[in-house]
Image 1 (tube, protein in one colour):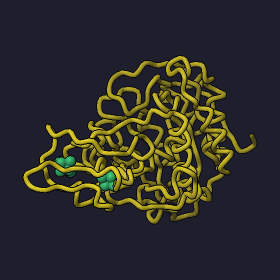
Image 2 (tube, rainbow, N blue to C red; image 1 turned 45 degrees about the vertical axis):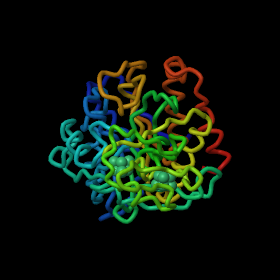
Image 3 (cartoon, protein in one colour; image 1 turned 90 degrees about the vertical axis):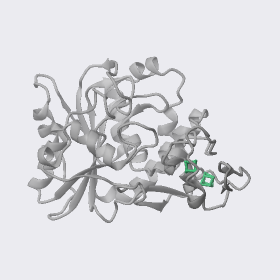
Image 4 (cartoon, rainbow, N blue to C red; image 1 turned 30 degrees about the vertical axis):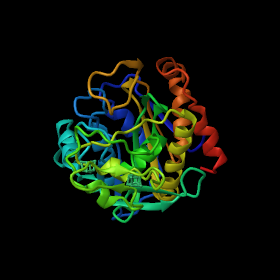
Length: 338
Ligand code: SF4
Ligand code: SF4
């Protein structure tokens, strides 16, 4: 508990900058002068109205600059269509939500690159994932601030630091590996027969012969999801995993692998504000299910998420998303030494 800090928003006017400043003052900075530090956050899907305003990220960037560090803000591209599927779309969405270099006074980047290919496999060594594929950001940043908006989620119950480290760092293929049954199924109406899925399939499971549509040999397919992630037409269907417990474990494994790489120079901050039923990946006005509480920070994502749930209570999320075995995130994190 000594390494967890909470600052309430009681008596503070929106956007609660004073609360965040008080929190940051208490934090022990692990960053050295001149360190490039990535602030990992989610600027909200195009049309989403409950994302965190950029004022907080700007405050965190200012705190880092005061310590001589060189901050930048980043996110990764996503699997589904919308305003963040491509890097350029995502940057446009960021800008429309106020996340610009001018306002933040630091760069805003897409960590898996403008083509989604700036990714790297890092060791994991767990039962679902021997390795995980994530954005290739580890050379670019000496340290990280994992800044997460705590809110509900239809598969993980809630989204906080664990989810931000996991889905947030994951390549599109890794996102698919966590979410899905992994085998591509073709929607012929969308397919232009461009052949890219065949080109990138490492096992030769995908084949195409003119003038046919591509075929996928499920005996050879290893479920790497590259074809699904990279198809320019989104002609390969994404299947969402029906085994919720496995999803929780995969989420935790990916987060744990990333954390192993960055734990020595990272801080974790959760914002218990705009607590909505669904995540910021959905467009539109999300239903608010909890009152604004404040900011929690610390040096471990599992501890910060656990403390966040103690503050919000889990009932608000369980009522919105009944039947999700979310506790598995915490029991499994302990089992694998995360
Ligand atoms: S990459 Fe997509 S559009 Fe191109 S051939 Fe494969 S499924 Fe069709
Ligand atoms: S999921 Fe991977 S192995 Fe299977 S067809 Fe697609 S690219 Fe090939």
